[in-house]
Image (cartoon, one colour):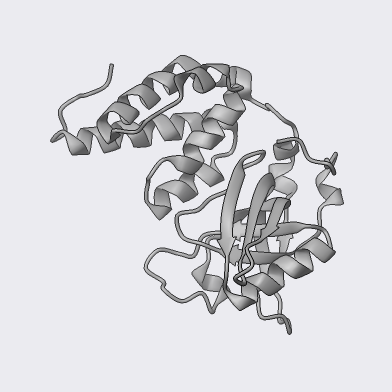
Length: 222
């Protein structure tokens, strides 16, 4: 999705972000993440974000930690998303869509009066995230599509192959990384991949491992 407010440089992004910790849900640059927001603290977070920079930091809690009270219980890298769709439901919920802008690294959690957490962040190591399609030429797209076909067949997933064929490589890689049903650690490896080629290779490796485990370690890749 194109943004009404594109960012040319990471210096244009806020250095303090409200955080939305959510296991198994990752956001990547130019990816879209729909959210059903109902907790009062996150309703307040959305209100404040809309009134301000419209950016929210999506990040995963560390596995096995059911509480999110301490900064050490979060992974160190997440992704800032801009609110690009917003609707009220009439029963106290918000339906929003975040469009990924750039990944960030947490520098410190701030002591705040808001009911939601806020952290000081840095985007410097992920500056290339602002460039649409960066690194796409280095991705082995054929292997990606082959992986998807095998994974979809074994997982009994319905896939719109026409849309897959038409999708830009970056869109394909990041959409697959966001939607594939991997564990939190694996999802985090995908978000922390240094570039698109590494993310695609990680995605292929994770899918191969998943398929091998389903079939008793017998090769199922072609």
